[in-house]
Length: 444
Image (cartoon, rainbow, N blue to C red; front, side, top):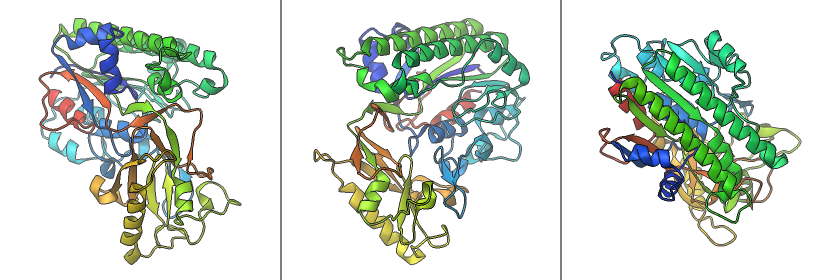
């Protein structure tokens, strides 16, 4: 068994890291890669929303097994919104497998390692999205976004008391990027430094075999200021670069601490849950479904309860399309025998959708059975669309126009996540975020 340290950098793209390393902005990343490490481009989950992708990372299985398709779902047989949390993750996470705290949960991945598991191994798991509320485990956890109560999001109590005492923040107020930009940056830098302080504390003062610490501030920075990444004339370009330099310093400190702790024998990785690119246009999927005759709304009602009789389909963030099937939803109008035709019609029309500047919007449209398998597949979306770079697909119900822009400047990309790993961790196909858990379990 080798101690394993994984630094999650939310939304940090392979292409940006590669370019910033070439420009000399990230000397610690360059130093690490000059050793026995490699930088690889990696595919995220579909959809490439953080809750789904991080859960795919930490369980090593697809959403059809772990059951998380987005930050928001509909309660079964209703149009009422529900917000899945860590208790709704149906497959055991890496730390539950090695810590033997999975309870009754199992998965195709955990089944492979049940006979290999030796003694219980301890983990430190910090700031992964979709881990609230923190559940008892063999080790330490504090939850990432969404974490409305840090006390309930931290296990055990002693870890919470420490984090509270040193002013640790589970997340920053992203809306300040719109209302008070200077306050946003001040909070982002503060949160990043506090995260580094907490991570170094637990890394050096606790017993553990697996340590996972995630930095979320990069995702927040990208959503609002990704257009500043390479534009030297942008008002916030220098601030953007300075943030990356600070992140580089922190990664370097953690790497050096870890190598000192393990005598240079530990396994170190960084990874992201998706990539990022600049937004050309936001694309409002429900407005498109209305315009195309698939969706009817009654605006006298709220949220997804607006879905009215005669609707064939609706969308949830980012571009999960659900057929309004008879028997699945209260006002379901699509009979079982008609479902395949509706799916084919929506798919064909989406693939021919062009932007106002006549650019193709949709890169691919996947049907449920192409993506998902497992006991949670019955709750999966019927279709998931993936946009071409620059077209940010959204499930907003309030928009009446198909195309628009907002205060967001950066969007997720599925194909441009990154992973830095030891050269010896080989794999035969293009790296996918679901692959990492199995690699980690092999090491441990």
